[in-house]
Length: 174
Ligand SMILES: C[C@H](O)[C@H](O)[C@H]1CNC2=NC(N)=NC(=O)C2=N1
Image (cartoon, rainbow, N blue to C red; front, side, top):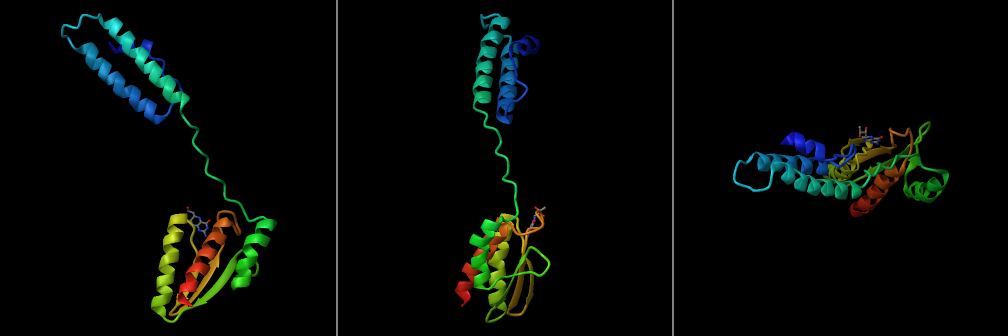
């Protein structure tokens, strides 16, 4: 039975996983039908042809609707224009360029250790969500933060986003 069937179903080389599992499921169900020895009047060949037509249309539909996987946007270093527009406000707010590195640095002072740790906890959750981590050092109520993107060897949009988040959060501790 399965031999008849494999001749009839044209599985394309490139198809989505869902099509593949769908075909496998339908093949299993056809084999089950084909192996049934009850009194179905249709000859096995005709049944296989009918079901193969159905599967081929399924394949045509699913490959026609297969959307190419979106490539992840490649991280890039900030351009001169992005630095002027996005980095400068942070430098005005208290961030500074790190000597000899394409990185930015900021020192935050809190009322006590609890406040600094609460601030760090919020930043840590964002860091995990963005998969982008600060270089930081905390002693009691002082937090020293350096931001740079190791993967591109300098400042990227991710550093801007995290630094802006920190500035917004820090306003709650003023
Ligand atoms: C493997 C892991 O995804 C990468 O190392 C991530 C993790 N966190 C990161 N954090 C920072 N600041 N820069 C990166 O390039 C970076 N890359």
